[in-house]
Structures are given as C-alpha cells and as structure tokens.
Length: 184
Image (cartoon, rainbow, N blue to C red; front, side, top):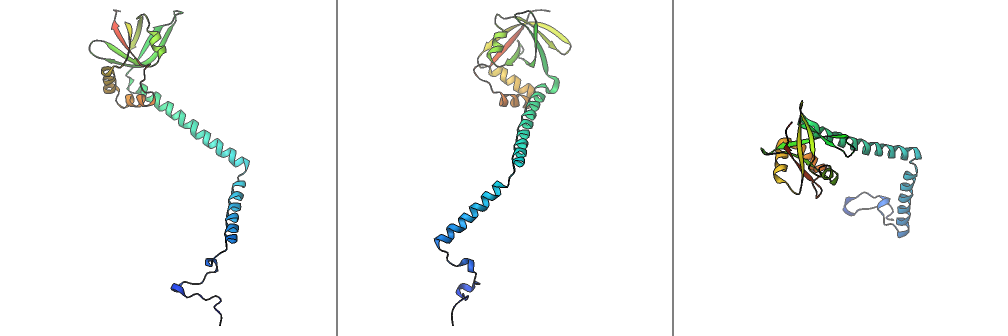
C-alpha cells in the first residue's frame, strides 16, 4: 500500500498546495503574481488617469478656495473692521480694511511686511473710517514685538485672531502702527 494522498499528522486534511515547492516553482509563482499586478496597472486607460488627475487637481483647487474664503470670513467676522486710507505718492488714496484695537492711549493697527512700513514713513496723516464716522490720525510705524497689542487683538478678535496668525504668523517684518489723533 502506498501513501499517495494520505496525510495523518495533526489531523490536517491533505492539500496538494501545501506540499513543499521547489525554489523554481516559488519563482514562477512570484513572477505570475508580478505579471498579474502589471496587468492590473496596464488596464488603467489614459482616460482614467486623466480623470484621476483632474479630480485630484479639483480637490486641491477647491481646498485652496475654501481656505481663502475661510480666511476672509474670519477677517471680516463681527463687523469689527475699519477702513484705513493712506495717501500714495501720486496723491491718490489707498483703502485697506483691517483690525484695530485701543489701549486707552492710542489706536493700534497690526500689519505685516515692509510695504506697510513704507506706507507710514514720515508719520503721514491718514483717514480712518469706523462705522459712519471718518477721522484723521497721524500714523507712526513702530517695528518690533508688541505683546500688549497682540493681547488686545487676541481679546477682541478671539478665534479669528488665532486663525489669521496661524495662516500668516508674525515675523521680523511685522509692524504695529500707532494712530494718534490730529483733530478732525
């Protein structure tokens, strides 16, 4: 009697796939798997690849638009925004909507960038529209850290201030602008 097809160890049923394989058969199985994988990749048509790229691009663009919209909404939220008018060298006026805080001595604007600092060279007279009132102030750019102004902004604008500072954090170009009254 031969032992063909009989397996009695540990009460396992005989399965021809479990039999020991030669290294050549293992390579053949690996190649077969690799070939199947490549066939799957080749099946993606050019139209499918283009469609996937367009979907990915649309998701990225949509995310960027949502980020900008959220940023703008946080800046404008609560109507606590003023309009500052500064005079350009050609005598035209430039309007900027921004946040303002009051430290009981002066009004403060918080801005970033060297372009802002240049707008306030020579302590110019600016116009500030707050609600339905427009007043004139002398603007003084005050470079450097201003923890008091930062605290006032954080208290007044809360989550909006945290969001804006997350998106565009302060750096060495950040400028606080003090506005001192110069009459009507």
